[in-house]
Each structure stands twice: as structure tokens, then as C-alpha cells.
Figure (cartoon, rainbow, N blue to C red):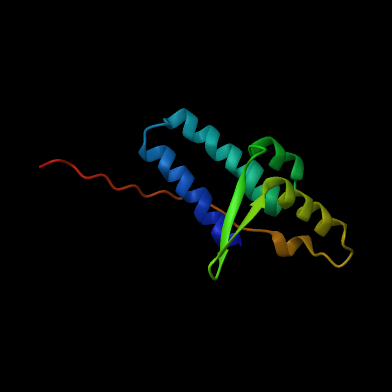
Length: 111
């Protein structure tokens, strides 16, 4: 699931850059939101309040298993994290991720 999440965030970020929606200032702001709400909210700090602030309430992760497509709404993700944090057997260190946003964009130049 972590790998899928990283792919989704990366593709969104690349799309915003490639389409020109992000400039240098807004890029830094987007990176800050991704760092606080996704990397630290969902994983490193397990800060579900940051997740609520950074994700749209209608955000959904889609995943596949065989031919089936599953929906995982942000509210269910947040509730799952909060439930795990309450489990006495839960080890927060296992949720930590060392993350860095990396982008490589290709553009075809006319000859």
C-alpha cells in the first residue's frame, strides 16, 4: 500500500508541474503540504489532524486485487491509523518512512 501511495502522490505532483500549474513558489507550498499531511501525517508522525488538513475530504485511494477495484476513502484511512495507534502491540517505528519528493519531467522540443 505504501508503494501505491507513493506512486499516486508522485504522479499527481508530476502532473501539476508538467501542466504548468505549479511555479517555484507554489511548488514549495505543495511540497510542504505533502510532507506534513502525507509523509508525516500518514506515516512518520501518524498525525491524523495534519492528514485532515492536507487531504480533500473526498480523497480516495483506488487499489486493485485481481480484477476487483477497491476504494479506500481518506476518512477510513484516518480511522485505521487512529485504531492502530490505540493497539498496545503497535510499533510506531514500523510506520516511519524516509521520503523525498523527486521529479523528472521530459519535454519534447520541436525540431
